[in-house]
Amino acid sequence: MRIWVDADACPKVIREILCRAAERTQVELTFIANQLLTVPVSPYIRALQVPQGFDVADDEIARRVEAGDLVITGDIPLASEAIAKGAQVLDSRGEVMSTENIRERLTMRDFMETMRASGVQTGGPPALSAADKQRFARQLDIALARRPRH
Image (cartoon, rainbow, N blue to C red; front, side, top):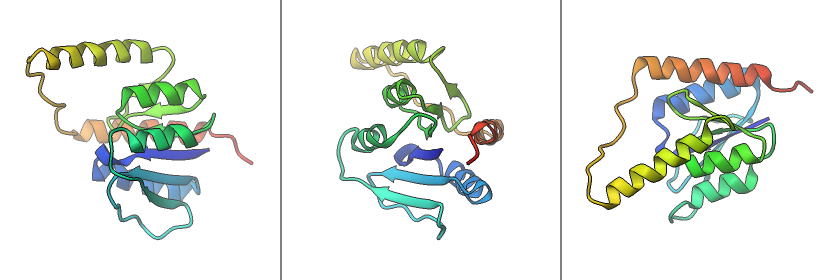
């Protein structure tokens, strides 16, 4: 199992939780972003900077992800592609995306995009709460506990 993080929109506190988990479990963790990220010195943690551009980081994750990997993203199309490849997907609020709920999420995303295109102000997501952080850490622990041991 490898963990791939869509790091451009990943909150710092979630990146910190991921780094601690990678060290503790010795699972390879890669942050992929358009910007340069500083990560702890570790044989398990790395950051990959991709060129600026729409969906460049998402495309890089989609290209690298394999069945059994874990993808951390809030991007619904990337989540859908990762799920289709057999990966687990978790967003930064601890919500699990799966074959059971990804179609509904894609439909809602498309609906909101249509609303915004017609001029409706939809606002952004609320700030990350303590409950969100706890839910993320709990779901990460569950995903890591399920990984096959070599």
